[in-house]
Image 1 (cartoon, rainbow, N blue to C red):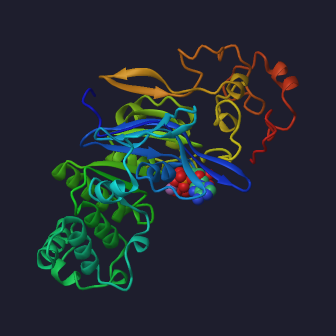
Image 2: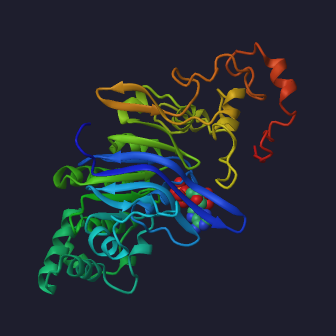
Image 3: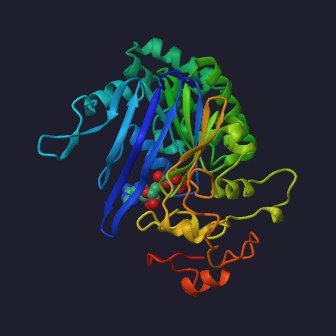
Length: 389
Ligand SMILES: Nc1ncnc2c1ncn2[C@@H]1O[C@H](COP(=O)(O)OP(=O)(O)OP(=O)(O)O)[C@@H](O)[C@H]1O
Ligand code: NI
């Protein structure tokens, strides 16, 4: 796409400075969101999806901090650093102030929908009252008009008898209906971008499907862009236009939805795909991804996925791959961070398979070499960091 993106994130790094060390929760991610598109952030628990989302709204709190990168929204700088006269990095002079972020950006320009509506809804006030107050505050409408707008929004998101439900309390709504209320609240100020952090994860599949359909309709009607955070590639397939696959704080694959599903490149994306339930497979056929994701506090050397990767070779332990464009589908770059692809040129083809991975792919030419070099225990890598099986 050639138009200026709505949101541009470049080399974003967000870290938490904890007693046990620095958690590199988001470690240099770059992506864009264009007007009117739904962009997925997908990955397992702990990949850094929520921290990335919160960073975009500058909602990271102590001991966390955005330490590098640039976030540009509609040409304005949400985050950016520059070198000061003493060589120290400091916030850029054109970076929006906390006040501007609070009054102009959050809610009005960029809204968020969280997984648990009960965290966003106050149990002691009526649903309608909360929505009305939100509209009063953010759109500056008088009470009666805000009430009417609130009822309209409830109707818009498919809540039956909105005038009556307006008077009810959050606990009187089902999970799906509460999630609809949050969508109404997010849409109330007609933001250009909505960040939805796993909003359907707690719902059953049927209700989830209904909410995804609703979002699809509303997206078309209002032209709102979305960042959709999920661990479920099934959800991605249903509503996203483009996808960023995250693993341990990094984006390992980035492509349009069609490219990602029909020309999957990264072994981690493949593993995620294999773990999606599909009608043509029984639960027994599902392949769980081997191993667990290591901690972001001491990520594995080289490619962070190498300890779990079926295609892992010795070079994967040594070289840390930055995403590279491997295909260009109609002007939409398909990027992947995996040295087994052309263009990385780090000798993947000649590199021996990692111990414990042999036999997976048939190439065992240097198996003995690999065995003698690596420790006998596949759970320990060269950096000394421990992984669990
Ligand atoms: N306040 C915090 N202090 C320390 N570490 C944190 C904090 N918040 C998040 N992290 C760490 O940052 C990393 C990324 O977490 P994040 O919540 O973004 O993951 P996620 O991809 O959203 O996972 P999930 O699917 O479980 O929501 C994790 O290692 C997490 O432990
Ligand atoms: Ni999360």
